[in-house]
Image (cartoon, rainbow, N blue to C red; front, top):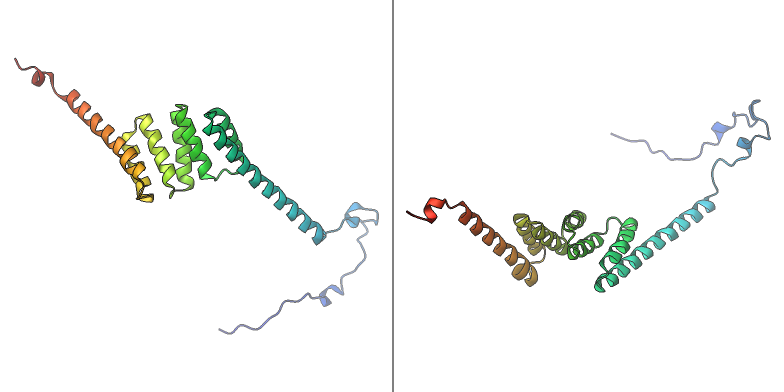
Length: 198
């Protein structure tokens, strides 16, 4: 199939027959006539530069709040750090690191269910981050979800296979807890007639 070669150009000739006079319903004093139809391109670029400056301010403020929260958490001023991170999350809701750090601090405060929610948010935002899976696993252990914790520690280890902390501490700890739980359940399931023979 052959396409004809066309070019785009402004068709001034088509506009010659159009009357330049205004309809009778408009007077020269009407605001509609005096308003420019299109904004000056220079004002458009000024707005975009202003919007870009606001964006940069948001980024700078978010980084500042994140760092202030870290400093407060290191001083064990956990609720204050959470407030800083909440402000930062308002500016950057897709920052998985903020959610993961908030989950860690919530664990320190024994706020287990909110910690799980924040860690799950971190994992959903960045499913390749081993720290998020590790924190989620720790929160699940604290909640009593050992099987889910083992899965998440395994995912963390898969993302970071050289981590001795995940392998030898977290995953090993969760596996030991599962073994203890299974032994306890099996001893509870043993019938009393077998425990005390006549």
